[in-house]
Image 1 (cartoon, rainbow, N blue to C red):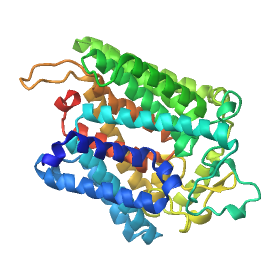
Image 2 (cartoon, helix red, strand yellow; image 1 turned 30 degrees about the vertical axis):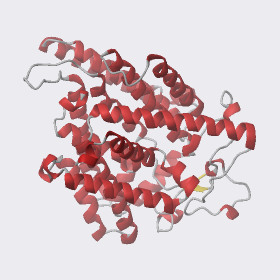
Image 3 (tube, rainbow, N blue to C red; image 1 turned 90 degrees about the vertical axis):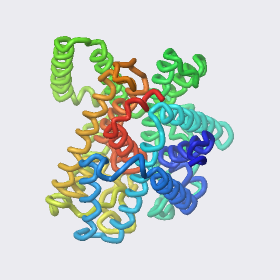
Length: 447
């Protein structure tokens, strides 16, 4: 227990967890999959140890029922899975993430999570920009990962697709058609990380006004600019839409916080509902124009074809799906030649809802939807309701209490074009927020 209370050990554990989940590709590209696997198992083992020594702080019956139901259904899917060995491996990965999310939820307050999250994000963004600068000034050409990705054979290509490169050497072309990928080797993922950074840095600056001195004023604004520049340099349409969603949700929460009476709260909720309906109508009516402004074609950069391929398979097993696997295994059927984009085998459906439908059928989609809705509702309540002090007196709002709702907004918008919500950092944050908002840890928001 003294080890758990050591601030240095706590920070190191949480920071390494964030690094493996957010920048796992950087670790895999640099040190190989075996190194990443060893580190991942070590962190999961540490998480299990934390849960054991703190067993008085949590219990299975106290966990969110929608989360337990979804995990149970995914686990039993191994009995009807078309690829049982891959399902077993996918379940191992999923449960390791669950243990990590649960351990972080039990061990750390929202304020601690916010501080360490900000620290890791600064390192990822800083190293990504330095990495791209090194490639452009020294290497002066695109570079491949030091370790080959599973299922990728470079000899099969006459000309390597851009998606296979770690860096495309496009830092000095970002104001034309270039996109940077950073140490994570993917422009869309780097864009989402930059969006997370904007959320976290903005909350830290807001928290600083309330007395939190963990971030200096000038340092905070500097990293806000770095995050904004990185987001622009990735040129990700999905992240641009997610940014707009985050801004709108933040504005709505702040309006609800200012509504002090029941009448004002009802009026504000009505206004927000009308705005959502009007916005949805505008998006549907002018979707072609908006896609053009975002630099996307009518196929959503080839995603419509991927969705069609995966949906065709899902329709063959509509009720319970083909079996859980989370991230697709390139050596297993039907993933080996299921769908390609620009000559590169795809290992996700690029839409979390289609992916869940394919893997767990309509039953899985319903369970997952219930989980997501329940987490969203509790996150909004956490952000909007005034916290209570130990004396049961209404306390002051904190900036950190907005973190779950804003992170979920970014992840849910991303889920339309990516399947990250069921793998790595996406599923980790879903588990973390589900558990922590269910536990009623309002005092921990500020502490």
